[in-house]
Length: 128
Image: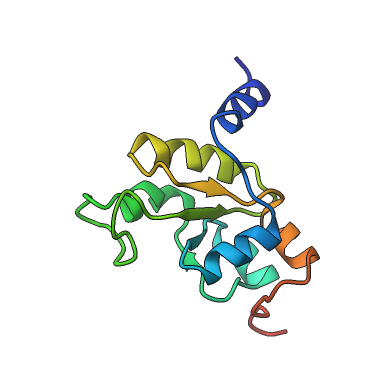
């Protein structure tokens, strides 16, 4: 199986959401998790209120039973919306979170770029 087939299979297992829905869910208490690496955050900015957890730390920080969990990782029923740059890496990240029992995890279709294109709030990068 190649990456395209894997991505298709992973995405078939849950409903992804668009920028407006993600913003609404965040306003209702969902946790937005930005997994972009620092260079992209420095280049493009941040989503206000999003928890920044780089991809290589994601499972460690969001597992409610984990010894290195973030304070926001309060339980397996938490609604989590994973945000990457364009909506690819986030889908694979969601598959991993769901394996940890975070059954309400989803991702943002189009990632940060779609959020910004929709005119939703962005904290400008430093130096802008």
